Length: 305
Image 1 (spheres, one colour):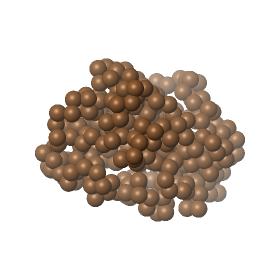
Image 2 (cartoon, one colour):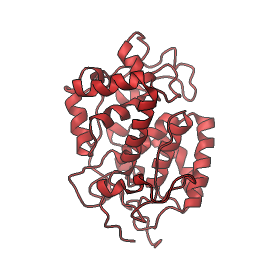
Image 3 (cartoon, rainbow, N blue to C red):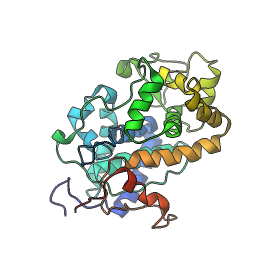
Image 4 (cartoon, helix red, strand yellow):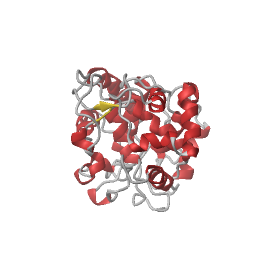
């Protein structure tokens, strides 16, 4: 079972729980919530629903630990997230990178004040850099047709308009750094003092607090120090997106509910689970809760230990 990282059995539940505590401590000292969310998303977000085979279909399989994928333009700066998590990976041998990335992302959302994400674990890792997805699977910030671009990327993953808007709301956390993405100001009054490394331009004033400020701020557009990318603005311009963006600006509970569901779905994309139904590390979760079977729709069930 442990002959290679490609065929290791599910991450050990006890080690997952311990790793979660270590991630919580890391967040308290480094304020790295945004980049951990981005790491998990970018590992999962390469999924192509039109490809059945694992790992060719991309998705949450730990491939983002390899240099060739870290060098993709959309992943600029994510080497820093990997460096933060590597000591935790080294500490827990019974933990796959695929699970660690998604555990870190969900924990960061929750610790920033966001909703509890109905996560499951047991993702297998790819074993070689040759198994990394090709570049160009992740969204751009300023494409010529932002709405069409978002749909092209997220529909390929099997996600819908509501999920696109809900997931966009995670930009309530973090900053855009022009030296990485080409977007945003070098610093603003909200970012010049950190916490963490100073600089960049945030979407919200309290950019380490997960709430629905992102939608309120885009709608109002009254603070020039806050970032609005073309892919943000389109959420209030496209008729279908606008229905959800308006709703989330008014109703944070509705946003949290839809976000938690969409985040969990994203985290499962393309993953191959062992056991096939996944494992939960939340004591209050029922073993056969409905979300346990989400992956059956979005990843194949040909798990072979």
